[in-house]
Image (cartoon, rainbow, N blue to C red; front, side, top):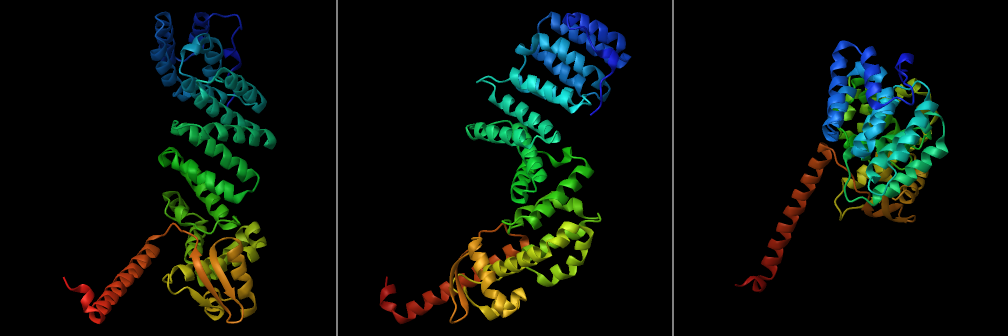
Length: 391
């Protein structure tokens, strides 16, 4: 955060016009015209037009050093005439000028109080979540989580809300769960955040970092066994051409249950110590996903699978197959029953998946086979019982 200039601090007793006059002396020429316009619109009490002009002024990087005094000694005089969501948006620009996070927290806390009314719950959520982010930066995890829980309850009651509100909620929630190493919750909230924004608004570095974090959470999440949504998301392409491109390839290997490709790419784990330390879990996860893929590729009337077949697709020794199946059942990746005598498992359900193009093509082929079987059956029935088909 950049700090604002010392000489832009104003006397608390200054009037709004006196504030503008003082700032005019300090602003560069290209910004002075804005201050003249502010005074003119303020005198005419055109609050909506004044808000628009303030937003335009704040969008200019050079205005940074003047935003704090303008907000505290000019905007504060007529803020009750302003749309509260716009007030929060301007406040979030101002808070970037504070170098001290405790000062930033105090500023945002006062902003929260200004929009804490029954008619401005959307602006309130936005302000509370951004305040929670500062708390997170100050390692106040309890305060951050309390804000997340409070805002989640409010959002659940909304029929509709500006996307910027949801984006703020999911971004801060994702950062909280990242700090707590809660991979499944981070994965969910990070993807929801991306669904609320225009990816072009992120810098290339931000895109790459988010793609990296999502890839790691997908791998490390104990309950994440379907990467389809991430694999189809354009954010993942930002790993291409980077030192972490192998993570993207690894996710595709997991999604396909490709153990051979996993073994080939796992040599890169040495680059990331936490992956190397969790190699046993990661290998078990690829085995589970190879089992899911093997079940998924079978037709619904051919889902009794022998332990021997599972050995061949998971590359596990026979004595570990039953444990793998029990793990899949416990995680609710599949439903069914195990016949220990016959050494086979009958699968009645497999976890729904977001499919990639190859898997969609496989489903298309199975549907074509099913259609052909139905037609053959109809022909047999017609030949065997022609009396049923007499018009």
